[in-house]
Image (spheres, rainbow, N blue to C red):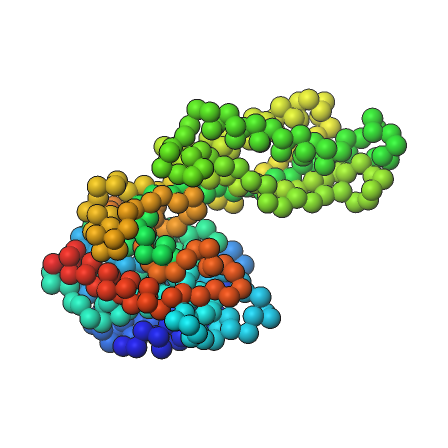
Length: 372
């Protein structure tokens, strides 16, 4: 198996999360079957009716145990002016294209490893999932189904071959503040939703500071739960009291802190704002995601194995992966793969080919270690 040709073929398939990932599964499935895997699919329509799916491939007995190698097949959007987005161009030892690092490089390395090594006893799973970039929907479907129970799992992500054993959770809501429109020269006749939203956002900053004072984890940088308002808009005109204001809010809870704690604090601040306005202001929210943190102990065998293989100590990261879902399935899990997350979502995304080969070697030795 030529790992460069494999990765180029995967990159050439546009699997932006807004599109169906089934063409990627259509490419992968016959290839893993030729390697001796049994396969099945889970499919579903997403929120706008686009068909999505997971490919579940197994070699060895259909029983708990063994090892799962996990890679998500979807990618973030790319600039249409980026001519190399679907090209898989090789230059200076790097392969360029959307998804090359996040996470098609890992998937190519898993395929190569599976072609070289056969499990001696325990099951080997290849799990290729949908919609990680928009909420880990494929991994959540696997966790909800609960049908497979790997003893250990390696989740392919661009970690620069550094084992990642823990990360913060990810939670998000859309917030709509509604006021009363009026002439801006007479503020008493109405209530500005934008001014009210500004007060609520200021209180959210205070919530972050209060939580940081009582909940921290030095494993992470920053060591506390963070909040962010990423989008805000509202109002109709400069001289009109705004009748509405919309903003997005995300927070990333540290391990040990319930994800809904941030939501409860924001809800309490919203109710206080409504009461202070005398009924002129209302706040509504739409939950988008409430995902817990994921933590595997530092002394877990899969963590220590990948530390030895890579020569790198394990770390914790502030962004999310499919780690919590694999932990939910009972796996001792770790995130590990080629490429750098700092280039993963940018125009010019690339993966160093030497890292892809090294990842394949590590995955292969993991198969020998955990499926024997």
